[in-house]
Image (cartoon, rainbow, N blue to C red; front, side):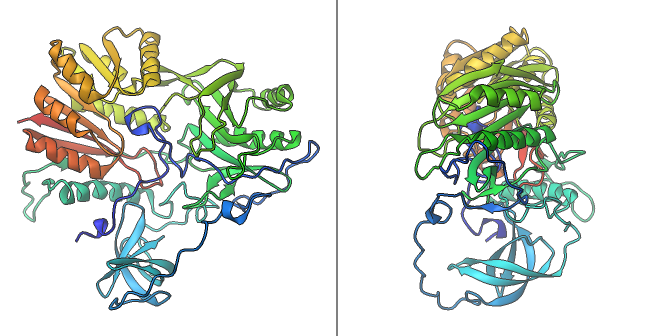
Length: 545
């Protein structure tokens, strides 16, 4: 059994891509779904108290059940015959790292997952939990450190659940992400990956290139979604502690653009001064749920979205005026009303409190209008790298017909349309298609058509209408392509398929299906869209045999 597959796959945290295929869900780790806030409202005259960054906040007025798991798991009977037991200390070698960023080691053949341990290290651990085939252990001491170990620069790294591998050098992260893709291709897809033998002769297989990283892998996020809670002295906000809804109050995040930090901090300060209450997800009371900030890297424009539990905002004019005065580069202040007792951030109603309803930014030469709820890639620098590789792998000469099977708001479609004769985009989310059409008009692109629906339903209908694709591009959600879409691709028989993936395991599974159907995977390029997290995007190119 491969060390990377000794427990079931789980959904990774931190990535938020909420408008196109893979983004139809909101992520709970770095994107802040729900919160553990309280309903106590500070007085209008109160000021935020001096807070130590990274303080873990149990909101005032909230019961312990709001920040701790309800009840206590019944202690299971010890499993007989295991080489280690709970609370035992042992020294192990770390031989790998799993998809959650946990070190993988073995104690007398028994697998232990160790948060914070890196491959190549010897560590002393305490066994915390045991199961039949694997267990979990706490890192106590690094006996021999990995050459890739670095000191995490974030002061709340050990508490926050947003990043997982800041303690690994960036070069080490890039190498590990490539290896994660290779391991999934071999283990799940049973695919041959190109290697060189001792004599240097190349074997037949898929070429997996080095991960394309960032020159400056910090401050890359253009969007912050921060859950809000309350503590003595005012509002608090930050990210959630790992695996919980406990808010880690903070004033800066090293992967956020600095301006996003400034806006969130100012909103907390002004809200506390005005006595704005924080939403309590346990009672359903309180006003401010989330603060969402969007930053356009190219134009510099910013949007602030206040997600509230109701339409009425006390001292609204005073609040908006103070925000405008303190943050002059904010071009749009919006309100999203979400009265539902849910962990989903946004509700259905949007209101413009001041300024425009959109801000504008560019990816490459393509301009995009960004509204309060529309999707826009959170790392615009690497998005241009990702889309550039997609266009390269599509092999366009200007004569081709291309289908973008999970087009979202048309980001990839519009990139492709600059190099193709005709592009057809399909997406199941109606609002995304509206944005896609608007963005096509904004860029005066007339050789692209968008349609609402499931790809596996719409594309066969296009074929009946005589539309034959030379290239099909897919950028599916984490769960991968719908099996019927893969069948449709095999029936359409395009000369080339380009697969953009955010999940190496489902990428490997789907490539196996396409290879069995007559395609050959030529090359894959991993792209690091989210440095210091366990996420890796990949672009694969396939040709029809």
